[in-house]
Image (tube, rainbow, N blue to C red):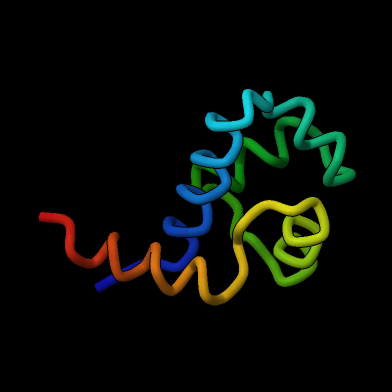
Length: 78
């Protein structure tokens, strides 16, 4: 079974690492504190649709097709 919140967080972390973006910088772009972003990335707080919309506006690959592929990858991990 997969957890969409975990998959979304993995995608955002992967993007941040690939682009060299810090949590503080992404949080500022999202209009939230670094602490709020950290809570989402660690699954302490759930991502909501407004968060996902904002991530997509910033060009972060979290659209449904991308997440579906990531979920497939996640569910095949052992």
